[in-house]
Image (cartoon, rainbow, N blue to C red; front, side, top):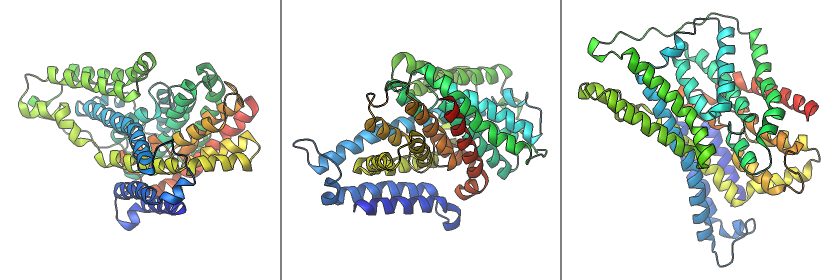
Amino acid sequence: MYAFMIIIFLVGYTFIALEHNIKVDKTASALITGVLCWTILAFGKDTILTHVTLAEGQNLAKFLEHNLLEHLGKIGEIVFFLLAAMTIVELIDAHDGFEVITEHIHTKNRVKLLWVICLITFFFSAVLDNLTTSIVIAALLKKLIKVEEKMWFFGGMVIIAANAGGAWSPIGDVTTIMLWTGGQLSASTVIKSVFLPSLTCLLVPLIVLSFTKKEILERPPATPQKPDEEKITKLDQYLVFWFGIVGLLFVPVFKTFTHLPPFMGMLYSLGVMWVLTELIHRKKSSKLKHSLSVHGVIRKIDTPSVLFFLGILLAVASLETAGQLDELAGMLNESFDSIFSVNIIVGLLSSIVDNVPLVAGAKGMYSLDVYPKDATFWQLLAYCAGTGGSALIIGSASGVAIMGILKINFVWYIKKITLLALLGYFSGVVIMYFIV
């Protein structure tokens, strides 16, 4: 049963990867995989008990229920964060808010636009976090690029840029937040030691593409003119855009001061946006008001992408509960003496298994007595776990979000983006080697 869980997990990933070949939506495969892994866990009592330790007086059923609810709480944080962030972005889009940005981006040169988009993503990710930034930039790409495959290419580079940008900021990625709040790294050390490798992780693929992707892009056709009664005034457009951006920027500030999970700040920002849109459209017709308020735009949210997140994270959580991830961490520790080797592999594994349980496992395996605060090991872990997930599109929260919003094909990503992501990843590791 213990090995069967891993087999089901791998088969599920294969179905997700071959979504377009087998004509079954990846969300269905992810949900089935997640539930099956927990079902096997529930039935494999004798095998599982040899790998986990139960508290005194606790039976396996109670153990599984406790762990499932605990993981569901963590997954719920991401799901509600996604729902709120995507709704805010849809509100901005419904008010033509992204024109505030696109009207200032005039270049159609692919290389120049790629540099602009990726650098914006890189620095925004450090402030907003990589998931929020990816959602915003994905919406922006739809306004800037007409041809789907070229939009996918930009989306793939945005994933690399978002993960690289999130790795060097204490609030840019879940894993750096874990290491910062857990006392393994100070904020100043994360920024000083991981910034240059993270920037290299992005710049190397960009430089390669600068010599190979020279062409002029075609923009989508202009939005058809709306009847006068349906037109969005410039005041409404700017109000919703800036309130939305400030609302997104407010999330890390809210977390810093309250120490509550980020989804709470995002829900608060959504509530403010909801009130704002209700007030500015209160005198409009019911039909128009509905289309420009949360009631209307929330129907445009890509719910399958949110459920895909749920399925994938449930599957990973089952492996963590059963002890497979802890055993993997232990095996790495026994097999490799170099902290560089261990962290490089952890980074690459994070493209298959969520980086959060991997980092949690590393924190549990190595105490601050072994590697004190701001030790090289923790700096490497922050970089590798933050950027390694770019190797596969489902290896990071930003990748899964972009995959859902832009409908990027898993196999296409491997063919077109994975090599670039790995090139950037290992280039950053080389920089880390010389500066730590």
